[in-house]
Image 1 (cartoon, rainbow, N blue to C red):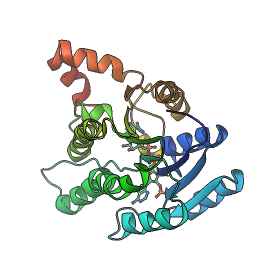
Image 2 (cartoon, rainbow, N blue to C red; image 1 turned 90 degrees about the horizontal axis):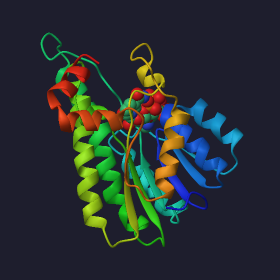
Image 3 (tube, rainbow, N blue to C red; image 1 turned 135 degrees about the horizontal axis):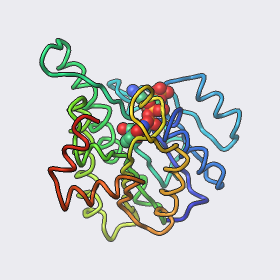
Amino acid sequence: MKTSGNKILITGATSGIGLALAERFLQLNNAVIAVGRNPESLATLQSRFPDLYPFRCDLAAADGPGGLVRYVQQQHPDVNVLINNAAIQYNYHFLGQEDIPDRAEYEIRLNLTVPVTLCGLLLPVLSVQPQAAIVHVTSGLGLVPKKSAPVYCATKAGLHLFTKALRYQLEGSPVKVFEIIPPVVDTPMTAGRGSRKISPQQLVDEFMRAFERDRFEVSIGKVKLLRLISRLAPAVADRILKNG
Ligand SMILES: NC(=O)c1ccc[n+]([C@@H]2O[C@H](COP(=O)([O-])OP(=O)(O)OC[C@H]3O[C@@H](n4cnc5c(N)ncnc54)[C@H](OP(=O)(O)O)[C@@H]3O)[C@@H](O)[C@H]2O)c1
């Protein structure tokens, strides 16, 4: 996939991995539609990069994805890359917490339903471009779960398989389907937990090499080792991640 001259929609572009992807693609002469809820972060981004189109939107709200898609159809019918990155991770124990159904429903909606919905609604726009891509940010936790975030792990496992099946469906179309599978990355999502984190910029360095070479399933850093261990000795991989 080419790395410049694209128009790229990035959800969750105000922080962490999404912000690092937005910065890198802007530096490489792409236009970026940056989606997030935080107005100050969006305004700061826009003041730094004239080729950035900020779109403030709560993707978990009832009309969040629909409003975003209408904006794209009307203002940016030339968008050719969709990066579904925004997500949330809740840590909770199913025994002893009362608001589980609400929290779980929110997490499933933002992490899984929204990316699937955006793919469905934006594929008619993407598929008429000469070259297009969908990029999903999943997680090593979608391959091997940890006990503290069961719903998060389930959403990432779901998105991982959705991404693979969608790639099969779109074979022969102009739309390439990529997946970034990160290890623990130093972002606000992981503040106060995890160790030996990589920076969002390191993740982006590795992803860009794969994006350019059409390597569609991109295991970042330690996830490569995790995948090997989980194939050779699944119980060992389970033990490593269980209390992560
Ligand atoms: N950090 C890690 O270690 C790690 C590891 C594996 C996978 N990942 C995945 O990487 C992706 C990015 O994570 P991150 O670590 O960069 O997280 P982050 O720093 O917390 O950023 C999350 C982004 O999502 C946006 N967002 C959250 N809720 C939203 C909503 N309701 N509507 C619209 N935007 C919303 C936030 O923007 P606003 O606050 O402006 O809305 C923010 O830009 C996620 O898919 C995550 O699951 C992260």
